[in-house]
Image (tube, rainbow, N blue to C red; front, side):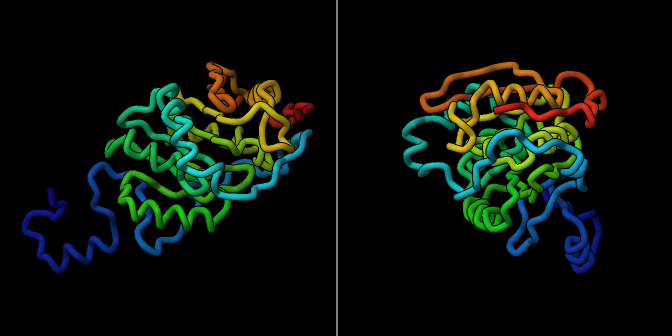
Length: 253
């Protein structure tokens, strides 16, 4: 269906299209060719407001965890998406999206009425993902550049947040989890997929994960062993305004 107003001259209508998006449903959409990759929200609470984690932070070494064919054979994404009940119309954030393994599998599940925010802090990863999104014509994916302590997602924009094989690489977990809360819609969940091993070895022990989430006002609502690693699911516990920044302390590894 055309968005062109009745009786509007074609030349004027085309000019207006350069100034405003005329898409059904509105919202954040995938950038067009050459569009700047940027944060989707103003900055939240600064990083220096939070304690540093009292455990090693793994170095970001690649935009891909294992190769996609191996991951598909293991069935992890299919299992995770099923366990989380991803369905049409949902708004999902793939935080630390990297090369977009989960992004491109989530987009068809949420459908045209849903939205996937592919977020990362490494611009070149998002540039590669932008090309993939355009190549696969995923019109319900928006790219978001974040900070190590702040995903920079729009307020009340997501029903589900996925952090897959990257939690151990978060430089400021307390800041990221705190600033993430403003993006959560009522009933939203935050899901972590990781390996049960020390953070220095690119994993996160579940007890440490629960402790860090609880310090910022989350509670665990589900835990599922996977063929390799685990899926832990959290939800905000109460009003985020009741989380006192000065009282957040780091969990010991």
